Length: 364
Image (cartoon, rainbow, N blue to C red):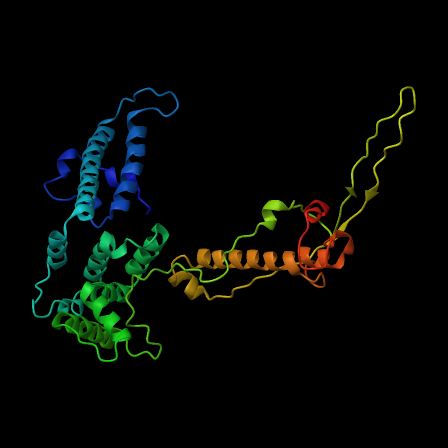
């Protein structure tokens, strides 16, 4: 929002503000009013005080008139902002009876057709009523903050989404929809029949026909994905040392350690130099890829974060499997694979009768 405060205050006096809303504040949203006050404060401060020295300025008659007019304009803007905040607080804590009254406010709704006005209301009315439903904790308590913000964005940009919320986000429609998708011959109450009829009329009038069957799904579903497999954790990343390499093979240095000894007095100490070896580990690349369209990224609340969680779980699952029993060809070699191929790490039981003797655990 671009505002020329100098042009707003030019040739104005405090007496120019009457009982109504000044033209400068008409048509502003709460955010616009907040930006207007911030810009106005900076301009009034420059008229009242020297920016460099901090000294109070001697105003010319024109500057004094503009300053007085700006102060009154500022008071009215702040009053409007405070009124908006107070109304928002009322909306947040209002009981269901007040909620119902607010939804009916300004709409001469026929009690026999409570959804009839959805077809006739204009776009701002549909948007405002849909936003009030979104603010209701009972309707949106399962949505996270980013998901709620995304639904609000869709309501503000799409009148069709707003109207769809009005005819589907109610108990009668939810219960009717559940019966229709779970029972071969559902018995609907009169209220539920009316809710389904309202949606069918809305759909025919504004959205047409679809073969996908997605029109009847209520809007406020929980889009978070529940893991039905994987998610077992990866102990290797906790137990093993992780290093960064810039080649396709990691080369390290290993040693079995240094052997000390007790030597006789006045004799030379023995050579206890450690024997060094160079273990190597071939580096392999694990890949996971989920292609998706721009549309689903915009319309599915939190889609990227949900896919990130799935990719992370699948990555851990792959590492656990390959670090355990990987073949080493085109993939990491697993611990069990290495142990099975190394006879030096095997301990044979003392007896061959399927029993463990007392010496076996110590040999192990």
